[in-house]
Image (cartoon, rainbow, N blue to C red; front, side):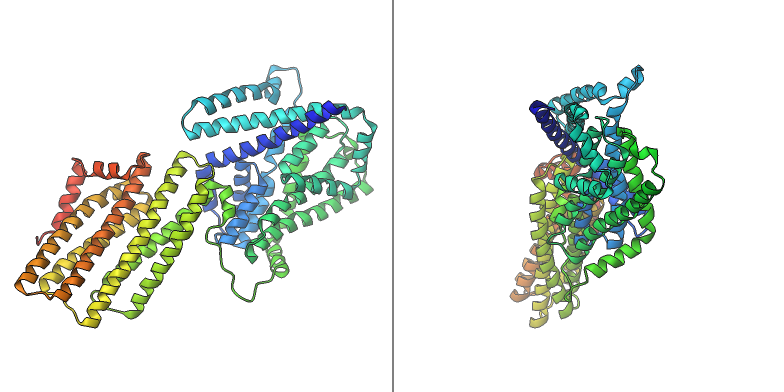
Length: 582
């Protein structure tokens, strides 16, 4: 092996790691909705969590990414430590898929069918399809598919380059002696741990081992301990991700390390005893690419079968090693670690925005109820909600801006933009709820009351405002376009109702039926409610924009107010309900 072979090996390794990274990122983007579905099924059931971890890791081709995601979930309070344990175990099984894909390089045979299964046969075709999709297609979805194919092609070309570069090592005695040295189980585990810790990917380190095995100088006796060590080395990513997190997230990273260390100690002991007592011939045979993939899968399955029934003990051990702090820890509502998986980060932002919508709706309902029976405790609660929605607007807005710098597909980008606008509208609704509560307080303190006609008119406006807030929140929560289309005709009715109430107020002032002081409160109330309906209109318009793939809300609202029969029907219905006395 000369300097040129070494450079080829180095270049092949770079291509291999680059292809794996690009393919993984594109798979994450393409599988965004699948990740949300899988992660939404997390329960305390062991097997549900196990299958979730397995499925997510098989999709994104990285147990490290899954584990970092789990640490972020635990740090955000989205997942309990017990759930995390089962997902981590599943991730260890899911990561073995990569080794099986790479083992295709070892296929040999003269038949055309077997030749077609070799990556060197079909990878160029995938590369041509991938570059065509990437360069000539306009939609992000097709571009992502193209990037996945290109990433796979680069990965396999890198693997092929590494295999070719190391082929000369078979004739070097020092290389043969090195792998004889690794037959010492302890040294093999250390070597696998260090290699994987450096490149932070067990899939990649198994691929490197498979490339070295292609020389025909790596025995199963040397490969198996290295594979065990690789499982320990991959824990470094989760450990680094746990820095700066809460106690539970640190426990999740510790469980990941403990799971792999305990599994390695137990099965390495079994392996050593079998080797010492039986000395099976298999351990001296030269490992194949398929054999390494098999050993990798069997080891991870064995670790899971051993420790899945003991997950409760792993949890207790984690609590023992990382005890609770004296003061309660603050849960990170939006963890930056989730940004590595944009689909999941977006779903978490959406969940927090739904909480914000619920709070804003409750706040307005409570504010309007104070007009009939003022309650200082309820008024203080409304102010607390307003502070909370302010906080949500700040953290969600900042988080979505960070998220926007990551690669999002068209749908995710549109949803992020819609949420960025919606959080401002929900925050303003809670502000108006505070304004209404303050008007109710002023009426209480100054003993202000309205005439019977004014009360009837105000009740109609209150009911219309509560309905439009309810409609917009349901439409936002469910993504329901039909309900979103009901918001704009009601908003127009509220506009008309406000003008009618303003005219009636002026008439009562002229007759002397209403005081100037009551008039100021009246004007503030109807203005706040009309503005609430404007914000609801913005929210509904944003939902319709996402569905229509059109981010021009003014054009959307103008289209809704057009000559559609649905709009006319709903406008007439709301007019009869809220403007019958006009």
